[in-house]
Image 1 (tube, rainbow, N blue to C red):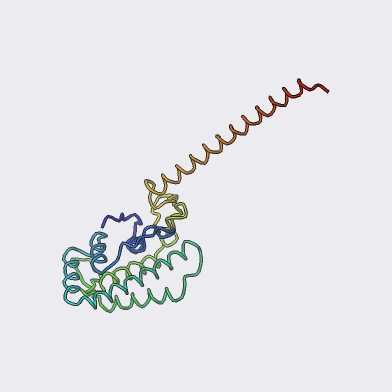
Image 2: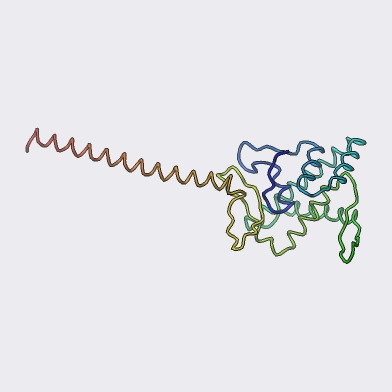
Amino acid sequence: MTLRLLAGHPALDFVNTIDPREGVHRVDHLRAYEDLVDWAERAGILGAADARQAAREATRDPVAAARAFDRAVVLREATYAIFGAVTGRRPAPADDVQELHAAYREAIDHARLTQTGRRFRWRLSSGLDVVRWHIARDAVALVESEMLGRVKRCPGSGDCGWLFLDSSKNASRRWCSMEGCGNRAKLRRFLRRRKRRTDRRAVGSLQTRYLAAGSRASGAHPR
């Protein structure tokens, strides 16, 4: 999978596995459980050992893996709806909040508190839903954090809609990627300006020819 990780947060990168999020040419990069595990390992959500364990469990029970995949996709869309509402300053849909709540409760039920040295962390157990549990935990951490107001939506040109966490110093980030949507927007502005200048020159040329023609007509037929 070559999908870029640009959101700055795993829950938002998960939302962005549909590219673009808006427009008519959307592509879903998660088509099966194997894609989900591959993406999670690439995104750093699962380590290599956990990814192999999930893949082995899916091989042993492909029907259960397919159901787990469907549950992950449902959570993805609920997460998109919640953070999309945040960027639009709208109340999050109650059904989507409940979906995240249920996934988070399930994650906690499958986690244990572990200690390494002087540090503690929640360690999720293995299972076909492990990616969903990680995403639920990360999404809840973001909605509870002071960074929630930094979640933004890339406007693209009506054909992006990716979500990202603006971690810039002055909260000035506008695009999911300056190299992608940002540069395309700059190009569109440049082409619009050039078209306006071309249109003005064309109008000026027409006016000049019109005035010249009027002057010749006045000389041929004096009043």
